[in-house]
Image (cartoon, rainbow, N blue to C red; front, side):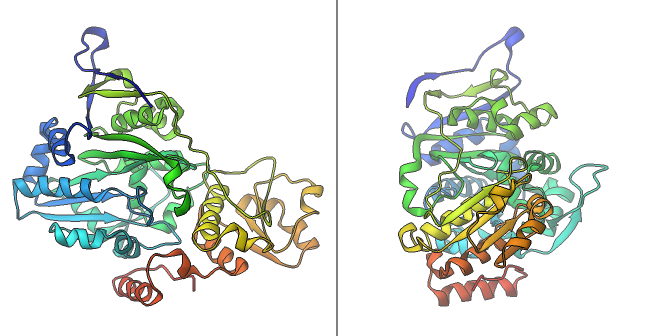
Length: 449
């Protein structure tokens, strides 16, 4: 609910703003005009688009349901803006899906592959690209795989290429919020992404941003999702909040500070946003951000806690410590929600038992009253509880990893006897064609069939 509109522009003296974010209410203008005005508000971003031969557009397209991915209208508006400057520019629309899915399928299911062809862009599936090893920060011991095409064009030869970040704003049960900063996790391959998709997640998001920064971030906040990022399709409509906004700027931290406000939160309530501000990567304090346009103030807060709809036969046994919503628990709840509600229904799966054990420091009473089959999930649970569990039970699955979706998905589908094709909006033959095309171009993902 909008209570008032406020214009932050023009503060001077000791309260002088140090950066700016442009905000447009699309009820008062078109998306095309909003995008043009936002880019034109930042001359350096416009110059970068103008002089660059290559435009790389990072969308959010990790799942199929409407409003979970960047709107085609916003993508089209950005591409048309770049084309209006120079019709000959090479424009790439890119993403890299989480484990348990692959990008070529998501682009096909959402129609973004067809859209790319219509507007004269190329779909770039980052999970099919050759990797190179990089370090996010000087002196950082961990190395990560990074798409070679992005290393070349957006790091080594940045003067010839422009990077535009187009996230869709959602609350996020693991990262609290997904917007400009979080959207960049799609630049990292799934296996490396999983290594710190745990209690280190917020720092991981900031480390990626310290390595690569968009020239401009433009946020799709027309309808924002609560309890994201990937609820089951039947519940999406009830989780949407009308915001009717497109906003952006070159300082992604500042853009995300505005995004937090749109969700009803302060910047310091979103951990990775506060960390980015503390590390000097951008302005995270709203009082230091000038608003070009009218900034609505929203009375409601968009919840980020995930809502599950499971049969009573699916249960979680949680330790009193080490239960990581950013990793094991968050992944398992999201995956099971999709398996249960997109692949089947709670009613159909009632009586099909599956118990997940996660965290550490379990009582004997907790571990002695579980229903098989049992999945011991995560490094903490494997170290702390696995020996005791194996002494009591025979049907035990061991997932000694953190922050992964694919292995959880495989076990859930097998144990609950759900056909994975039910979870995709394409037929099995089409799914196989897309997967084989991806494999031919370097995809490492294997279908859970």
